[in-house]
Length: 430
View: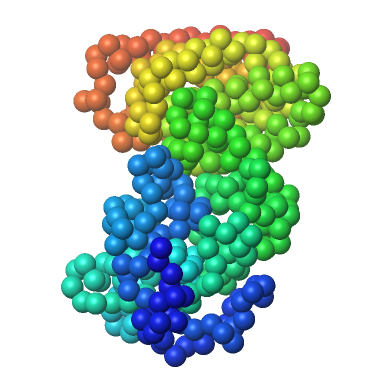
C-alpha cells in the first residue's frame, strides 16, 4: 500500500522548503516536524469522507471506489467533473493563478494520498497537466494519519474543519453537503465525533448542528419514501428543497414528544410533509418560496388542531404516491420528475387539499390577513392580464385549444363568483 511518509523518508518526495503551521493543535503532530512536499498527482485521490464529495458520488457509491490515478483514474476523473460543475469560474481562477505564479497555498493529505484540503487546487493541477502535458506537483503537508485507523479519524476531521474555517467561507458550503457531512461524522455505532464536538470544531452552535443532522435524517427517510437509494442526496440538492427538510425537522422536534402515541402522530405527519414536498417539487416551487410555504404549513396546520384532519385527508393519496414512486424505481431527479408527471392526478389532488387547508387557515387568522389574501389574488390576476394572460416564459403556441377553453371556463367562473361576492359585501354595508 502507498505510504507518502515512507516515500518522504526514502527521499523520493522533494521538499519545497516551506514550514507549515497547523491551524490547531493535534495530538501526535508537531509543526516543527512537518514539511511541505511536492507530490506527484498520480499518488493522490479525492476524499470521499468530505461532505461535498460524498453528496456528489452518493448515487454511484456501488460503482465508484476511492483510488488514485495509478490504481483506477475513473474515481478521480468523476469527482473532478463534479468540482468543475460546482464552481467552474472559481476553478478557472485557481488554474490561472497556478499557471502564472505557481501553487500559493499548500494542501493537506493523508499518508495514503487522500486529500484532506486542496480539492480545487488538485483539480486545477490535473487540468493543467492534461491540457499541457507538463509535469506538475501538488504541494502539500503529509499528515501521519489514515482513515483506516479509527482512533485517528477524529483528529483528521478536527483538522479538516479548522482548515475550512481558515480557508473557505462557511456560506459557500452547500447546506445539503454540510448536513451530509454532519450526519456521516456524528452518526452510526462508532461516530467520528459527537455533535457537540462538531459544533466546537466548526464554530457552529450545537443547536444548529442538531438541526442540520435532523434535516439529513429526514432526507434519508424521504429518499426511502420515494424508493430511491437512501444516500442519493443529489436528488435533494438538484431539486433545491433542502430548506424544507431543515424546517420539517424543527417542526417535528417541536410538536411531538417521545411517547409511543406521539411517535405515531409524528410518523403520520412526516409522511404528510413528504407529500407536500413532492407537490412543491412537481409544481416547480423551490428555494426561499418553498421554504416560506413549508413554514406556513408548519405554523398553520402542523402546529394546530387541524393537523390530524389534514393527515387523515391526505393519507391515502400520500400512500398511493409512495407506492407508485417505489414501483417506478427512482434513481435520479429526472426519474422523480417523470414519475410525478405520470402521477399528476394524485399529486394535484394532494395539492388541492393542501391549498384548501392553507387557505382556510390563513383566512381564519384575521380580517386584515383575509383582505391581504384577496388583494394578493387580485394582484396575481392583474399581473396575469398585464403579461398578456400568461405567466413566466409561456407562449400561446404552447397552449392547446382545449386548454384555452378550460382557461375561459375558469375565468367565467371567477367572474361570476366575484359578482356574487361583491353583492354579498354590498348587502353587509347596507
